Each structure stands twice: as C-alpha cells, then as structure tokens.
Image (tube, rainbow over all chains, first blue to last red; front, side, top):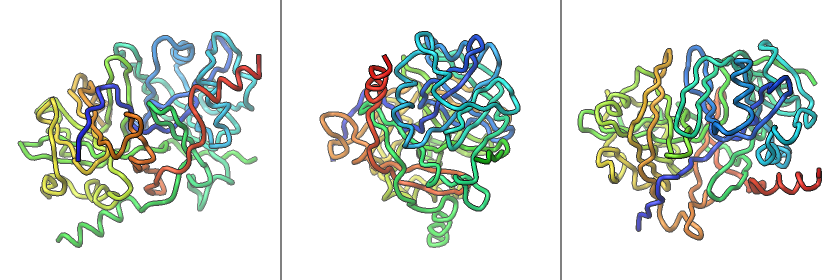
Length: 189
Length: 189
C-alpha cells in the first residue's frame, strides 16, 4: 500500500444541479456541483458560487434561487449551462420553466427534482460566496416517485467528479441507511 | 404532467463521507452526507453537523477534521458509524488509521480517498453548525488512480439518498464536463 498525496485541490463526488435565478428579470441557470443541505430545521440548502459568475447577481437581487436537478438525459444541455455565461447568452429559452411560492426562483419543468429557496445568509469566502437558502418547497412528478416519495432510480440524477471532469449516472442500490449499521451493532453487542 | 409539491424537507443526492476528529484524544468518525467544496482558492470543504453530535467537540478542540470517503465494500461499517455515537462506543478500533500534516485529523487507511482540513470558520445555523475547513491535503493510493489522478471508477464511492434512506454505487460514465456543452455551444452558434 503506497499512500499518494494529492495536493490540496481535492474535490469530493458531487451531485449536479442547475442553480436558477432571475438576473435583471431574465431567468438564468448555471451548472453547480458545490451544494449541500446545511440545516435540518428549518431545512436549508447552501450553494457555493465563484464571485465572478452572473447568477449570484440575481440571487442577491431577488433573495431567492432554485436548485434544479437534471437527469442523465439532460447531460449535454446541463454542461452547456456550465460552459456559457448568462452574460453572453440568454439561457431562459432552453427549458420550460415554472415558478413556485417564491415567485422569483425559476425552476425547470424537465428536471425531475426542483427546489426553491429563500436566501437567508451569505458567507463570504476568498474566491466564492456561499449562499444559504431556506428551502421553501421541493417539486417532483408522479412518474419520478414511488409510494409518495422521490425515487432516485426514476429521477436518474447526474453526478460529477473532478479532476477527471466526468458526469456519471447512479448505479445500483448497495444497502439501507440506518438499518445495515444496526445489524452490525447487534452483532457487536 | 402533474407537478407534486414535496414540502420543504427535500434532500439532494449526497456523497458519503466519514468525518473524523480526535474527541478527547480518541479518534472518532461519523457518517455524513452534508458536505461540499465551498471555496476554490484556497481550497475549502464544508461539513454541516447537527449540534447534538459527538464529533463537533473534537473539531473545535483541535481545529482539524478529516473527510474520509468509503467505497461500496465499506457500506455496512459506514452505516454503523452513522448509527452508533462516539459517546457510547469507541470507534477508533474499527479502521487502520493514519495522520497527515495536521497531525490531529484521523484518516482511514481503507478509504480510497481521504482529505484533511484545518478549521477556518464555523457558521452557526439553527440546528446545525457548518464547519468550513481549508483543505490541507488529500490522499489516495496508486491502485485507485489512473494517469496520476483519482479514478472514481476505481475509488467506487458511496452515495446516499433520502427519504428512501438508500446507499448507491456509481453507475456509468455519461459524458465529459466542459466538453459536451462546448459541442452544443458550437452547434448553436
């Protein structure tokens, strides 16, 4: 076993989202891998965006943003939204859009999972800002759900890894959380 | 198409990490899905932990923590670390451990990808604290790399989704980031 140092610019596996905001009244979307839930109650989601991007302007303007989760079939258009800036191209016509309770966080009808947030805190970091939003509501469709819950096999979300810059699909179910560990706990007792 | 509101407790797909810290001198690990990169330069990683947990005590004590990424073969022991608190069970003997430059962030030799961090900021949220760490170094092994880079097919990381509480493997390569979108951009020009 030979341990190899990777330097410090290491990036964990990432879920892929299109983060949406109204910038000067135009719906804009950028491809993001740096996002996570950050608070349990009230539910909060945080996205880290480079300060140079166009989308943050809209997040600050309206105090709202969305996280729209594309599926594998949307890989190319998703990557396009990460390659082309809203400063140079109008991305509002790429998708069928809808709005929820916030009324200003554009969401994507084609995405099997959409979340709209109300900005509650901005953490300024050296090159990025971390936008923390309280989740107002999530949206899916019956065809992506099983027994009333989002079914991630049907949702078929995209993953991203770096530095190999590769998009991935989800693979197989490996086990059950808060269950397989309980079995092991009983064995150890 | 019938859009279905999911309420506000929606959780995106998550990478799974074992977050490590020395708590009162004892290496402890907890299973975490709420983590992401948050800053480009210097590289920073953030983990959101419920304030009730045992691990945050060690993060604050030492100002360091690790994010150790288990593979699919480690699913049961990973779930065990999420089910059993370090207050009730000594988890330090579960893994072969090693330390890096921080000297106080315990890492797991069996994990194909390990990251050690120095705590730089704590963001207090209602039920969780967000610990922002500057990445000091990442570690892997030759057998998990291709052409000098981490190879996520070999790393075979775990994913987690909720509320179905399911662990997943990675599936297939779907496409190339910052490349497939460029092809589409050229088509649109």
